[in-house]
Length: 250
Image (tube, rainbow, N blue to C red):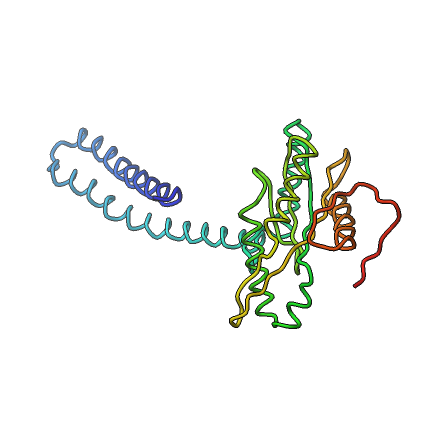
C-alpha cells in the first residue's frame, strides 16, 4: 500500500468517525434533556446517516486529492528528467550538484564533476539514422545510470553529452572512478537493423575549488573533455593545466 493511499484511507476514516461523533454527541445531550423520544431510533439515525454520507463525500474529495498528487509527481518528473534516457536533466543535475557542494563544504568528501561525450556520434546518425542514434543514447544512458557514483548524480545535459558528479575521499579515487567509467562503456552500443553499433565515450573531469559554481565546474570539465578528444578519445582526462592549448577538429 502506497503512502498516499494509506493517508487517503486514514483521512477518510477520521472524517467518518468525526462526522459520527459530531452527530451523536449533540443527539445524546438532547435525549438526556428530553427522554420521551425513542432512543434507539434516534441513535441509529444519527450514527447511520453520517456513516453513509461522510465516506461518500470523502471518496470524491480524496480521489481528487490523489489525482492532483499524481499530476504534480508527473509534472516534477517531466521537469527534471530527460524523456529519452530517463536520466535527470540539466536542471536536476544543477540542483543535485549544489546539494553535493553543501555536503562537501561540511567535510563529507571531495566533489568531482565530469562531462562525458559519445565519440563520433554525428557519424552514427549520418550512417545509421537518428533512430539508431536514439537507441545509442538510451543504451549509454542506461549504462551510465548503472554506474552512478554512490550518493551522486548522473544526468544527460543534452545531445550526446552526459554529466556526473559525486563525492570522493581522495583525488585518486575520483580519477580511478572516471577512468573505470570510460573503460566500462568502451564498446557500449546497440543492435540496429541487424547491425551491431558500438561506441566509446570521452570524459573530462575536475575537482571543485572554493567558490566554484556548478557552471564553473562544468566549464572546467568541458575544457578537460576537449583535451580528452584531442588526445585520441575514449579516455578520461582531468583539468590539470596542460602545456599549450590544443584545439580539437570539428
